[in-house]
Length: 195
Image (cartoon, rainbow, N blue to C red; front, side):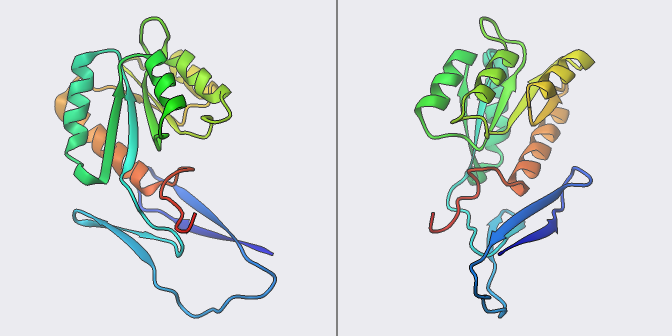
C-alpha cells in the first residue's frame, strides 16, 4: 500500500509543488509524531521529510567555453560557501567525460554557444545516456531567441536562463538558481539516509 504526500515549497518560482511518494508495508506504522531533520545553511532552514538528510553539499557542474564567464561564475557561486560545490568544464566533450567518469552532479548548467560541440549537442548526449538522463540540465545563454528556448525544452532541458550582462543581475540570477535548486529534489540530492 502506498501513499502520496503533497507539500508546497516556498520558492521564488510561483506554483512550485514537490511530491514525495512514500511506500509502506502491509501493517500500519505508528502515527506518533517523528522528529524532522533539518539543514541549516546561513539564516535559512530547510526542513526535510523524515528519512531524508543532507550529508553533503549540493553539486553543480558548470560547462562554459569562456574562461572569464567561468571565473565570474565561480566567484559568485563561492558566496554560497559550504552549501554547494561547483566544478567546471570548458567544453562539451570535457563535460561528458567528467559526467561519465566521476561523481554525478545534482544539476548541470550548460552554455548553449560552444565551439566543436554545442550545448544542445551536449544536452542531447546527456539525455540519450541512461546513466545521465535523470540529471537536471539548465541551459544558459545570451540568446533569448524563441527558437533556442524551444529547442532546449524539446531536448528536455530542465530550464533555460538568459545570461545577464549586468554583474548585479547575474549575482541575483545565481542566488535565485541556488535558492530554487536547494529547495528542489533531484535524483541524487539530498542523499537518502540509510541508502
